[in-house]
Length: 224
Image (cartoon, rainbow, N blue to C red; front, side, top):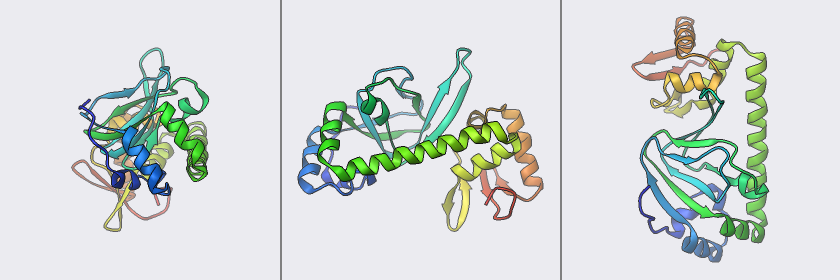
């Protein structure tokens, strides 16, 4: 992790979570929030650790994972610019529920627990925004649990591709740095099985591939 870098109020204002804070609160945050640059493969938080800070992604990409005693890893979510993590352990004083690892070089804003709680208590809009995000994450978790329980591997891969695809020039594209192993970890299958599913999706005209690029074709069967 790099030395802490100075944080401007403009940078904080551009974070959706803090967009509605008054200028005086932004100025206070600028004095206590830290900015850190991390290389790829850095473990930011560990499952089971006590919560000490809120993290906001300002660039790069990270993955949220859990693993069992044998080391098998499942990817719960992919975090990108504007996303944040670490708030649950701060709100309930529990331990971290998952690991978060950088998938590429990333920059984060880091807000300590005491300053986070003080800001949260003094800004009702911030509390409401965070509650809305927690509800959305619960909905996403319920969907993921339902997919794992009710869908076959084909359906889980199709659903995951739809969820992680980004709209670029009117097309839904899966980010190049999302590997087949990442998709396998998301859906609870082997890399080889994911490869077979992608081959079938391509054969059916549901996706188009070029190198590491996967483009979703806007037709039925769960990909659009």
